[in-house]
Length: 416
Image 1 (cartoon, one colour):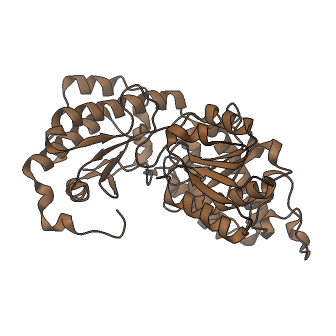
Image 2: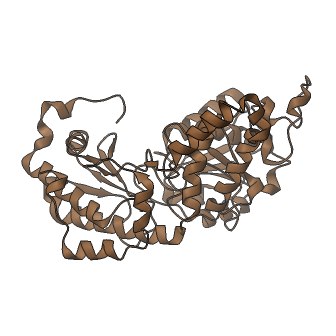
Image 3: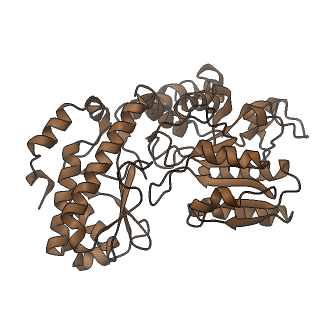
């Protein structure tokens, strides 16, 4: 079965006709014959991005040359784009900056938090958190050598495990495998009541679900630029630090862009005031320009409409897969109807990797997360209800015919 052979039912067609976000699909470059269910891992290309990057390359770099650090405000790009992302995550403009990668930003904020939390030895997280988050805690603790330790607790026990010994609670708001969502406000309040700081990873939240960092009294957060924000492969990340912590937290990476007077070229490091102290090296201007294009697109969207459509698409996908594919050993991982969730859906199958390869070969692109999870990103700005129904048609056919058993689908690629 091919995607082109699938026709939507009248009910599905009616839902697409009534979709308030339907016009946004045309603002993305999407290849024919593909249903892209991996925007939670790499967002699709916005149509305006190539022209914007070309402008930076040909005009600002090609003609303006080094003058563009001033004339095109390259020097202000991290704060300018950070201020735009702040609007998407419910923060003030001066509390968010674009910089480095998610991993590097995690390290900065982990070390900054532990430096400020004297006498509290515990960093609390959950088992199965995204690996880089846990790796960065382990690396920071080893590097600091200050006797801190990482403790892991099941998500349902997080609040009860926060004590006066907890320096930092570090959690991913939307779980990268399951799409389970933490109650940010409740956990932040519980941690702060015990004197702990909270660091949120928003990599599967920003651009996917409504966020309100300041309303939740969040302390710190990091987020990814290349997933739902459509910034392109390897896009710069962002970090948030609440204004009340700016003076107390100090980045462990004292790069020149985080200096109070970077062009004074003095030998001694003096951290910049505010969020700028968390900058480090020279910003990658071409990459920041691509990210800004994706962020600008999101700023034209009502995130509440995105959330409503996301839930409808997720629930349709779950209902159809469970009705038509459960007999083949496919089981849901993550939230069911009505529960808080992110914008991806995961199913477990013992041969999930090969099944996903068979789907990709037929134009339904998701991804696989070891040991057995098939993950499908639900991106409301360019996915239609008809796409969801067609994807399930292909999945059912792959399972029924056991097309996934082909030898080509058994080969493990470097990126899954």
